[in-house]
Length: 153
Image (cartoon, rainbow, N blue to C red):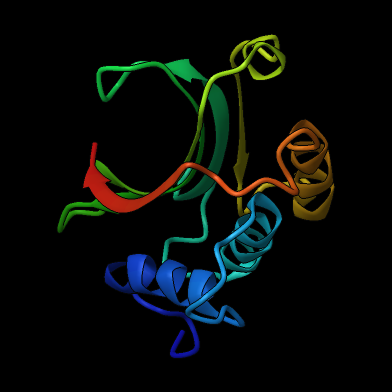
């Protein structure tokens, strides 16, 4: 469908959503990032109209990926990439990671993850509402760091 961006444009679409309405002098709050992710999550891309071809992953926990522990919220869009015969080849994930200094209230949240897949009977708006409740402690905060990237998996 011509209205749908190509998968190769997903990272640029996410970056544009994060930049929308933001002045160069303001830092992004978690709420602003979350609203950008909702817009990005609603945008449909040129994928096969089958379950598992376009998914959203919401996950968090305290991890030491960069050497020191950080509370990390990882908001990911995953696309199925098929080979020339239409068979699954690999996935491409577009990540928006928000990192916060660890503190007891955040550590107490533990680890959590939840998937949503387009082209299923699941309700996207209800999934967003449920995931936003998990962000309550963070919505008004400015993350210590935001990392936006794409990777094949």
